[in-house]
Image (cartoon, rainbow, N blue to C red; front, side, top):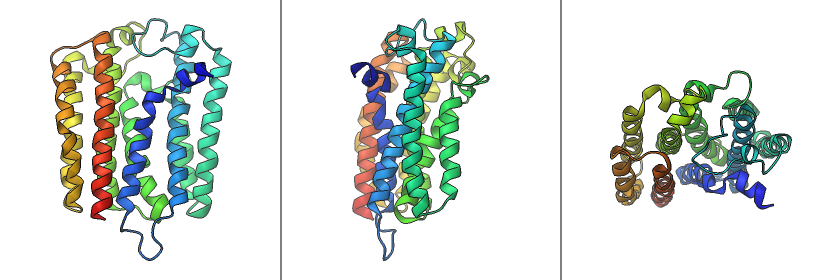
Length: 290
């Protein structure tokens, strides 16, 4: 069991949960006479978490069979380390995607079947990030996937599941959550530039180079706070998110200071904590102001 918990990479799950919480908070006060349908919000949370776990297993499988994880600085991968067979990890990914699909179907049947299109796109994007003959994560498009599906879709999609409406506020907050989710990926890819370059994995970090990737990371952190400031035009109390601003200073300083390799592992943890703090502050502010 511990093997599969390790493979699911539980430390990444807040990145999936926080946008859902923010999307639900953005729906507060917007539901009219019907209010928020909370069971659909709960299923949206399961969908997001299951997609994150599915993507983690899918990446483990695809990178493992390609050999791109043979030399790795970050968290242990099941296939590359021999802790689980490639087939078993692939099945775990498929089961996770099926769980997301079933919960998403329940939401779609109670709202609109157009959500099925979004769900299929999300699952396909999760698999082909590193899977298939031409994975788009290998050509520098990973950040686009993360911004769209773990930012905009997770946040605004949850608002839609809650009240059957996508609001401007939910889209704005989706941009904030997407920026922080991308920052996590950028740190991963910054850390892996040497090994990714050696195996021909042309992530955005490899394409940009070290220095520009460092500034991209800092820019994404700043963008998240800037977007929260824009959201304050709808609900000023969302500025509670700025209480987390001091948490952005140490990782930003470390990255611009040239941290590399294993030195970026604590930065990744700090970025995750920043995402949680900003998300919780924003969610509380949105809910109170709704």
